[in-house]
Length: 401
Image (cartoon, rainbow, N blue to C red; front, side):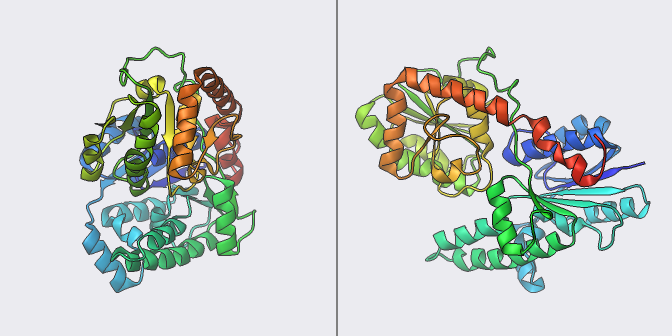
């Protein structure tokens, strides 16, 4: 009988951030194919406890280890061993022993690894199919960081990580049955870097739960107040999100407030850094920190913004906003990978002036903004159901649905 080992860099429950949303729905899809053993890491004991309580009854077996590697130590170890820093940050001797013992008992027939950091736990030899869900081309992200930090001390570190991690990603892909990415753009980039063809490198896109993210759902009035409201949602200790909200608050919002003097900007998401918290000193800016549910903030948003200067794959924050029938203004980087028509389902703008103009256009014409929101939701329902997005897993693993 088939049994699947699912290796995942953050325990999938609760599905309240981009990586856990994808991994949770992947777990659900795998569990419909065969019993699943989950071996996962967690950022802290509280996250691990939540995941254990929810997932233990759903798994054939469950092992979650809390990672505690420090960045300076991980960097030093990676330099000594000539390996990616990313791997050292997600290394757990206890989890590695558990995985080796599980595979050694012969119970596992298929393996799915989620995120490149988990490739280090794959066995050197395994008879069954192995899928590697890289999600994004992480090495390309570090190459962009290196370019952005050209005059900073981090330049050398990010440049090295881009080079070493890129070589590691290609090596892993060559020894697995298939490598998965969140969008065709990411898959095409990896094909060009690795030399592997479409049969070995596939796009398995993200989806959206349109029943949960439904504008008809009755929600509380978080975010309600005087003045039009632009909302950004995301994990607020993640560098691309930090850079995006700093840019919007400092450079774009002042342009908007020249035309809409009471315009507000809400930054909604957990773990805001001190730099993000400091933005509340600017006129019209609110930083919520972690909220139990982002939907009330989306529901009252006059525009949802994604001014990301660096984005990889598909942005869940945009799928959620569009499913909630909110009008969206996104940078070209943030919109890449989403199968939607600019001007019909969302607005795409780059540069502070263009972004401010697009947001003001939505504020100025509420009827047109509402129509765009309705079109966006219809597109999400037609294109991005999770069951359809995860359907290729059965075929790739050779397991009937």
